[in-house]
Amino acid sequence: MSSPSPIRAVRPGSALQERRSLAVSYLLWCLCLVGVCGVQRFYNRKPLSGLLWLFTFGFCYIGQLIDLLLLPRLVRHANHALLHEGPGVVDGATIERQLLALARRAGERGFTINDAVLELQLPPGVDSGVIREEIQQLLRGELLDVGNDERGRVVYREP
Image 1 (cartoon, rainbow, N blue to C red):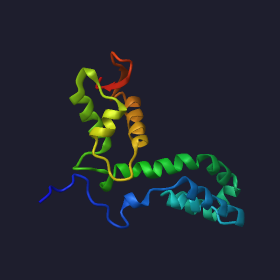
Image 2: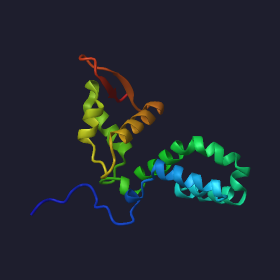
Image 3: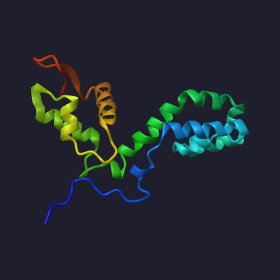
Image 4: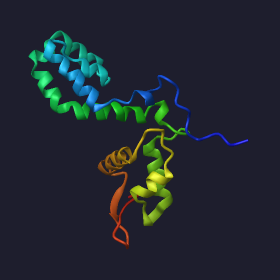
């Protein structure tokens, strides 16, 4: 009998199956051309501003034009929230906590992105780009330091 996988199974309709797509967001944005504004905000988990856009024609289309530039950020935030909800948590640890634990285990030698990709328990569909984003947030929060090892590789350490 095989041991159970540490990654939970993805249920139909779960948040992992609801990752937002930038292409779909741009297609929904195009609905403003026929007078339906704000659908892209509903899609990216912003229902209140979606209602506001819907009833004000996207703030007289000014908000719609701004959204054209902000859509990548909206999609990134909608997908980032998934990583800190239930399905993004593996055995009770978020990606952030797993990275901090890896930094502590690595000690002075630090860890590379490759080490993180190999060591972390990630939900299906999560790639190294998400790990890079998490590391950048930890660096901004001064929870990790960045440096180089003796071979010149970029490594991340606990401060």
